[in-house]
Amino acid sequence: MKKRFILLQFLIGSLLFINSYTLFAQTDPVPAFSISSNVDLMSRYIWRGQDYGHDPSLQPGLSATWKDFTLGAWGAYTINGIGTQETDLYLSKEIGHLTFALWDYWSMGDSTINLFNYNQKTTEHVLEAQVLLSGGEKLPFNLLGSYLFYGADASKSVYLELQYLHSTPSADMQLFAGYQAKGDYYGERSSFVNLGCTVIKSIEVTDRWSLPLNLSFIVNPSSKRVYLVAGITI
Image (tube, rainbow, N blue to C red):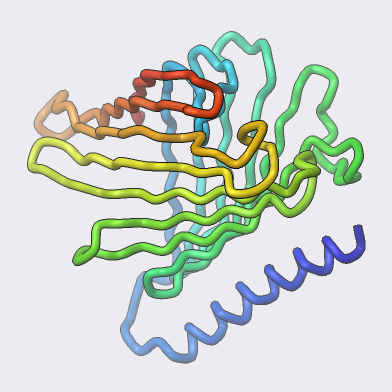
């Protein structure tokens, strides 16, 4: 356990060092600090091909950004108040086309409400080291890598996802293919667990306000399940 927390401290320290280096190297003025928030209402909670059974799901998000350094929180909660709820924290840093992040995923049920339980054998937390490589405007591809290095996933799963982005005047589209390369968190064996497409379209309500609508078609070849999920951002 000591080695795992040393690894966590090293990753956080690396992010802080990179952020400090960027401050000295940067010459162009940028906004020093910003806060953003949003609330998504989803017909169902599907994440990386896994069905968490929230039907429907309220998903709020809150983040604070200082230059390219972001601290945020995200949650997923059942509308009827019954079942497992989720509250996640993350820390991220952008460096050019790379985004490094640490995530703390925490699920809580009626009998598991201890936020500060990080015991490997009993914790509901899952800690993740994540990196996202973006191709930018000239190359509309993203590559996501995820390593669940501590917590409720004893198999320490590795997840890889390739994303293709395409925009039209009427909508934005993302095609994705997610593969479990190691472990059993997303499936029983190494396999594709998350294939599909997401389309985001803004519905104009008034001259000054539009409502983003997203629709996802998701296939999990490992579990042989298919989902069609709709959501709006408030």
